Image 1 (cartoon, rainbow, N blue to C red):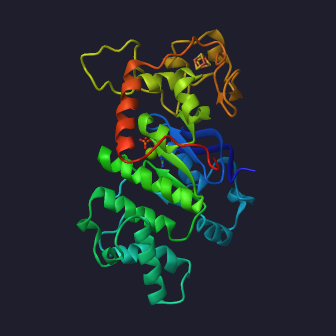
Image 2 (image 1 turned 180 degrees about the horizontal axis):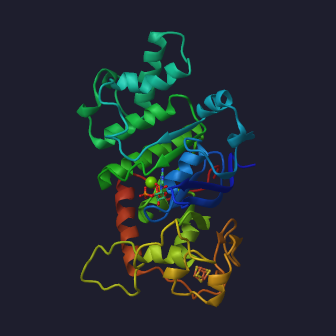
Length: 353
Ligand SMILES: Nc1ncnc2c1ncn2[C@@H]1O[C@H](COP(=O)(O)OP(=O)(O)OP(=O)(O)O)[C@@H](O)[C@H]1O
Ligand code: SF4
Ligand SMILES: [Mg+2]
């Protein structure tokens, strides 16, 4: 059984005049113990809201979340407080997420104090030192303040705090987007090491498709509040079976401006999550849309001749033209691979292999 199962999760925000933002509108996914599930999609598609909803940092409108046998959305406040030790979150902005008035030691010790872990100050200090060392920082930094650290170091501190309660699952909400490219690879590498040592599962939210390929075992692609495709990482890049995934891969920036794009990238903005299109929500931007797409909402189904676990929500998932990776995506991936190779990072293999 997966560590985390999310079924038909909806998180709607009423905004007055009878209007509702359907930020998360029927998300279903699973995360295995020790696995990284990547979650990608354009800005505003509902990735952060999904992560927060799973951790109950936001109330769900409907749906089910099961974590290690617990029915998360049905737990009492006290039960949820206990479960929260095992489910943590790391935020995108390492500058905003650390309180400037607390020392690093106080920041990392805070969850230990809240949950009454460790019998006294000395024991907690020892634990904080170990946590800092586990993210590659000397224990001595506990006495210093956040402004004395770089973005990459602050993100390590945020990770140390998330690890304090020994969680089984962490939502990483764009944990490296605010960092320089070289530092990104180091932090992704650290997260992978911590996962290998401790068997932690991650929901890794990201924009950067070339990086997430290395960080995740499987990838879920989100569009306007729904998951439209899930596949093992390599399969998603080699055999994408949803037009939106293909558009995202084609939209990866071209590193060499003298080279022309062979296909049109994704154009325009997604429709508003207040007024969703009928039928398939991608149809207003889809080059493959047919008459049925306006009438019928496509369910997420296994694709024919795909890797195990490859699902797509497109009426034409099995009849789309053959896919060849666009030049731009291929070269950016090669670039990212170079950076990753320098950092000693290789493509993720499924947990347990
Ligand atoms: N409290 C709220 N009230 C109303 N609308 C909200 C609220 N929080 C989020 N939204 C809307 O819900 C949608 C999803 O937002 P969310 O932050 O989850 O997107 P995201 O995929 O994380 O985007 P990004 O990549 O920019 O971080 C957006 O349209 C956003 O404007
Ligand atoms: S169901 Fe139709 S509109 Fe939706 S992605 Fe598939 S082809 Fe495009
Ligand atoms: Mg977000």
